[in-house]
Amino acid sequence: MSRVGKAPINIPAGVKVSVNGNSVTVKGPKGELTRSFDPNLTIATQDSQIVVSRPDNMVYNALHGLTRALIHNMVVGVTEGFKKNLEVEGVGYRAELQGKNLVLSVGYSHPVPIEPPEGIAFVVEKSARAFSVEGVDRQLVGEVAARIRAVRPPEPYKGKGVHFVGERIRRKAGKAGKVGGAK
Image (cartoon, rainbow, N blue to C red; front, side, top):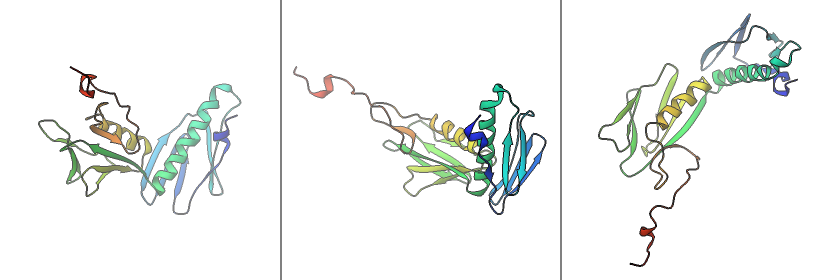
């Protein structure tokens, strides 16, 4: 049986959870999330906890833990929210906010505007090199951050581009002739 799936999810104060068949709606101080799950799994609220149970069938082992993890992420999202930190590295590279849109200057002949989807906010630090993607839905935050990184992924020679904070970029040596060989 799934160890993750067996663990109950505590419902913090200020969060309302409603289960309607295989659909779960979570409302909290930061927003509201709704998601549908497999109809063969049973989702119930007991006291101030959410419990996910499954039928005795090996097929639902992985789905049991996944469902519990997704509901837990919904509860964490509406209470604390999720955040992905990114960095722009390179001479002349920067990020700035224009209204709600994020505008990246990353070595192209034009600035690249990125419009946030519903429920996503961008925060740019004063240095204009570091910024973050914030929201309630963990999947959407990660997807938007990955799309921003794809605008100019870090290159392996100087590390220029957009990357996650703490991401390790594999570096290459470059040309052997530049190292200082004899002529």
